[in-house]
Image 1 (tube, one colour):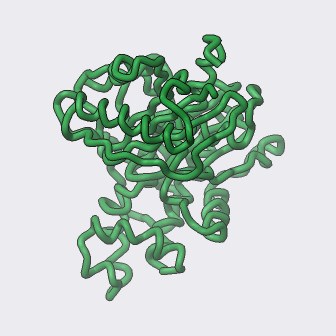
Image 2 (image 1 turned 180 degrees about the vertical axis):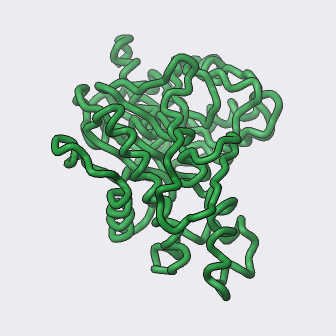
Image 3 (image 1 turned 45 degrees about the vertical axis):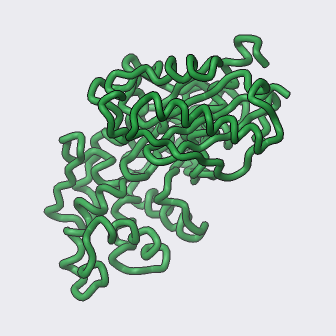
Length: 338
């Protein structure tokens, strides 16, 4: 059986999936292997290769059944997989600076490798999950995690941009001042800008901005006794359970997402808007509430655009690997490999 492998390389783990030529995923759920990115490029590439062997064995296949590999990593990087000369955001080793990870992996495993950044890869999966092989629709995906990634798919093609920075949606500036209840708040991002989407919609924003801002308004809250880093990780769960402070933080984030989606509607007139990431790995009731709060902040749309749907991306933990595999499948078909 000829299959495509999807490899999602993160700062801690590597996640794998396998995709057949008829677009069936052979691995359901997480299939992980330690990344060891902090030990440098050579160690990590071998980890990817070793984990791939484990993944294909889990599916009852051999490594020779893999005809191509789709790889995604955190950025910043070029569209072809050359990491920034400052290194990857999540890979703490000097060898990653300016490293061509796509070419390096292709040489290590002696197979063709395609490349997407992790936000674009997740966007490919979200788009494919809704539209399948239909190449006509356009979608915009925002992936909320520690930061905020995303991607734009136009007529089935992911927008990578001239330097690989297409779909850096987290750094689109939004009119956050129009959100009620955050008077005087100045959301700053690690990119050194103020008011970009990531500065409001991310785990980092909760820790850096929202907890210090809202805690004085809720005296005696359990988070007062915790460091902000630990407390930030609990906000999603507390919000889902109805904690007023945590709900207020997520309301602001949802309103910010609505403002951002309004910009995307007027830029791309998309067929779908998609929200993914760990922030919305919750029960459907909370997801529906979040989407309704997104729409609260969106200015009135044209009648023809008012029905653009907002979806929650499924399989969030495996979205990157799945999107990378779908991208590689397209390459394999064009190259006659499958």
